Length: 149
Image 1 (cartoon, one colour):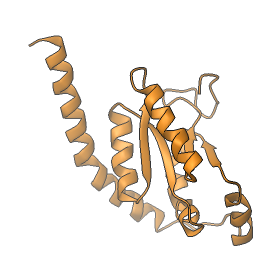
Image 2: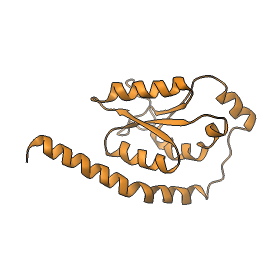
Image 3: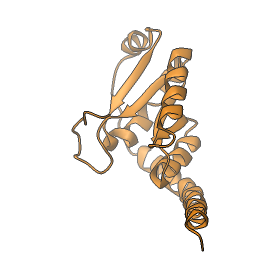
Image 4: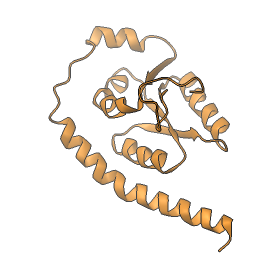
């Protein structure tokens, strides 16, 4: 098998695996989230947060699950959340989960598609969507913003 064919086959397997695992994981997350007692910003504080034309949440990878618990606030203020994800398996898997929570995502963190994905992400924020980006690398160090992020 040629190298290009192997890469395409590997990408197809990743896509199928992500598509199969995302619904089950999203269900498990919904069950987990039903047990949480959420307290956060008041409605007045959310109005203040959502008031600027451009809003972006900068989080750590470990906070992505918690972000889901608060993801209904921006739509309640007429805004959509858009999450910048990677193009590999983790990005496909996360994208599938986000889809099941009604959240948008842009695949854009790779060397090949990084510029196009970043441009789409910026375009969406300029349009009024609320951007979400994790600034620590998925491979670590955990909860430390990396200079290249």
